[in-house]
Length: 308
Image 1 (cartoon, rainbow, N blue to C red):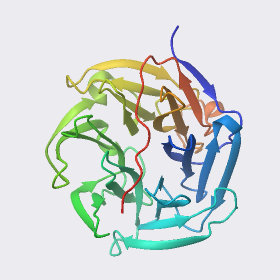
Image 2 (cartoon, one colour; image 1 turned 135 degrees about the horizontal axis):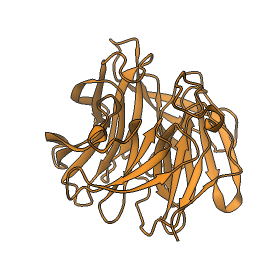
Image 3 (tube, rainbow, N blue to C red; image 1 turned 90 degrees about the vertical axis):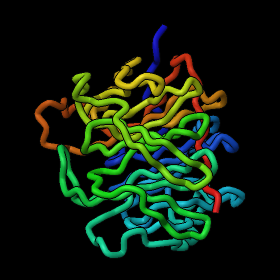
């Protein structure tokens, strides 16, 4: 029996559903709607769904380690701490940490994730960036314990998926504009990356669409969301340019993925409901739902909380 894909019935439609994060301690899925400026919380065991709204574009929500009810979030170009009771329609408070790019008014933060040690990594893109490629003004950063950001890469079109090898020696990264997944050597002691090289190239495998968010499983393979591709692909990190599997998703604009569930063997999938002028897409399928994929035969890892 192959993978089973189901729409999570309790959840609605999202303009740009993004950034799924599974908090294993509380068995809770968090995610955002970038365009609607909302943070979302879903507790599957209770079928309980809530959200809160802010006044700036958002792209990720990650629990802050040791601080229940507090989250590290993006607010356009700012990284901030959001205090939210998980029920109310508005947060209790928002504390700015740092404005990543105060000098680039047309940029915003996009994908963000904590590495296995709790260090936040995130990148930027132009607010009006489009595909195939809009303005190439994005950069990749990490947030240090001193609450300052360090830039690692520039000239990025759309900063997207982040993942790390289980031994913390490799980082995997996606600039969607390049239509490939890249690999870096990762030095966890200095939080530095080096020796960038392609790991998987969409064009070589005739994979339609663009790589977006990604995650890694216990076997060290990557699961990559394919925007405008109506699928998730599983690729090898042991051998470059090896496509291991494809899982079709009944929503063309697949944005990101995160393992979760009680046994960490369920893949949560976010998607967007943008009505783009693309004749190759079946517009009747463009909904922006959130999906659960089971029967993959592999486990992943819970989301890591940010340590500050």
